[in-house]
Length: 365
View 1 (cartoon, rainbow, N blue to C red):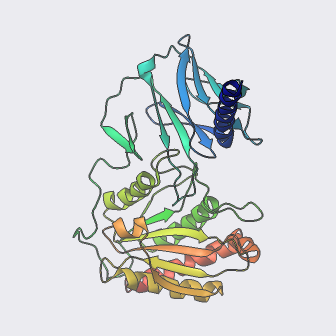
View 2 (view 1 turned 60 degrees about the horizontal axis):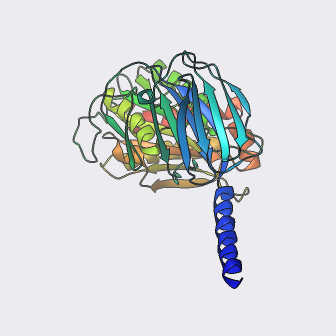
View 3 (view 1 turned 120 degrees about the vertical axis):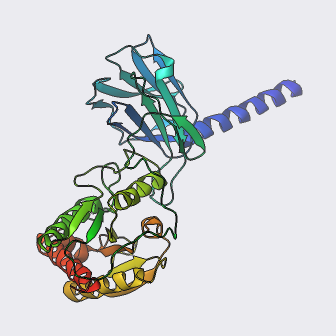
């Protein structure tokens, strides 16, 4: 009798541990994207890593089954704009959660690739299951996502190698703005909103608006401007790793042989009273600080925000760009007053003009 009770107790404890582990993981969001090669990507966001399987039912339905619970804010039915699928559904089942995607074409198992991405601390993106479906037979090199190497058709911003730190490429630093090649990088975009203010204003939106105003000022002065993005989209592709997305932005400046690289962002902090404006650089040349300081002085004076100075930082885009590069943190979206400023056209134009004036001073215009 004691043996039976002990066996039952062990079984009950094991069952409790298993259920607790499964319940701990939650599906928190489901998204999709389509790239230039018509690859359909389904992305399942998780609260933490979870077991999952991917199946093709009757050659016509993609099923992503996740061991865990379903978050209360997950959209249960959604529309997909793709030649491969038109909709998806999210439901609970006995094993956890199942995402169903009815396919418009016959899909075979080799057409489906899946992997899981770990939580990305640099962007705040959660763990997520990524499933790519492609019925075309495009062949290309292996692309690494975290610790998982997969083969999938992708659109690369540049077919050349990444530019290492310290690579000596010529860039102009004098002679005025006319004819200078300048790359503007509006931060975030597409699947990555960046910081979000108390009233819902998104960093990806205002950074692009400031970038567009800056482009207008620069082109009017005769500069040759390239943009890492001109609309609300990812540069590398939806839900890419932070490294791939950031390198894609660097590649734009490399491909356009830029003389200067300007990345536009907004800051955020849990303390909503903190505010100010700052410029970051990496000292890979004798000109990075000079560029940053020229822009920072103009922005601080024009915005009247607290001057947080020109600071050294190990940010990817300023470190990996061969030309002088700066990353601007234009106010704190988490600050109520600064969010209101950031979302106003007046402030966006004011900052763009200040950055323009800083570039003009840097190039001796």
